Amino acid sequence: MPEQKASRLPFHYAWIIVATGMLSIFACLGFGRFALGMLLPSMASTLNLSYSQIGFISTGNFIGYLASVLFCGHIARWIGSRRLIVIALIIIGVSMALISRAGSFVAILILYFVTGMGSGAANVPVMGLITAWFDRTIRGRAAGFVVIGSGFAIIISGKLIPFVNRLIGPEGWRMSWLILAGIVLIIASLSYFFLRNKPEDLGLQPLGSEGRVLTPVLQEHTAMQSIYKNKVLYLLGSIYFLFGYTYVIYATFIVTTLVKERGFSETIAGNFWSWVGLLSLVSGPVFGTLSDKLGRKAGLMIVFSLQALAYLMVAANLPPLFLYLSIFCYGIVAWSIPSIMVAAVSEYVGVDKALAAFGLITFIFGLGQIAGPSVAGILAERTGSFSSSFFMAAAFAGAAILLTSFLKKPRHTE
Image (tube, rainbow, N blue to C red):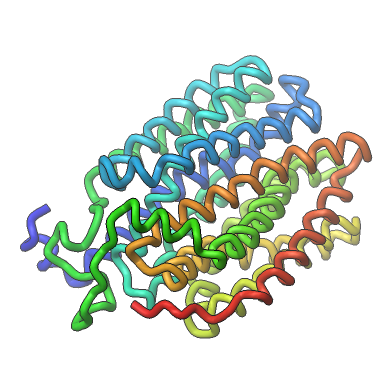
């Protein structure tokens, strides 16, 4: 896109990156990951899936996610973040379309593994674009707007999937997968047209950095060597691991818990899930901005405290009012931790190493996502209820609060 086109906009092109990035997250995580919770009850019924098999499907997705995170940073530097994001979204769309035709646990497990690979390969470079396009003073807010794409996807899946199931019947989940796949492919084309790798491509500076001297970018091998020696990244990674382990248990099993254990209809459970999506729309911007003001440490501790409450109120099998409070506590902070982490890593290591650093902690985060649903599924299988799994999630959220208390103020200033 020529420079003069960007200059005619009444706002900085960085906000186009945010809007398109939000759509990419809407597709790669919102539909590629979080729609699964709504699809699982009907899939489990028609394919006779056990609790542990449901957990392994979710785990397979995150193994794929983890595998792609290992190399997506290098590929992004080779072909550019924009191309990688587009290719990854196409992979997600095609694999989801194929899931709509799958007839066995093994087939779904393999295809959803591929979906996970696409999700990781799209998510990391999308978040990396924020560090390139925004100054640190507003990076938390910008990342917050990007991550709420998942919230919009949850709202849509919570309404669309029960509607399709009522219209078509027990096999309606197949049509739902196909519809979601089509939307993902449309977003892939939009990402191709609107995303740009860096402000310099349009003759711009990162938003908020005008008038400042920017630090030169280090060579890739230098950046990678230095981040592996940075102890604070492993502390951030451990905290991110606990987020991955706990939030995914709730996201994967809350609808199944409501339908199978609490006696709610799929439509009512879908309404609960849509409320998570609606509330989550404020999670990234509000808590990302809060962390800009109060610091990343305080922001993370507040978020984990609310998540721990959400898990406890489901685990304790309290009256329905507490389910609404649980949905509120979970939804209001749902996507805030990724937005805070994007801002945090750039402050601890600098913009030049931010993509590599975020890839490292996302890899550790991915380990948590792999472990969470499989352990929770096996635990539910053995106890006959997901209550023990939600108690475990609450305990791990508490551990995250403790680890966060050890974070020191970042020394890096851009």
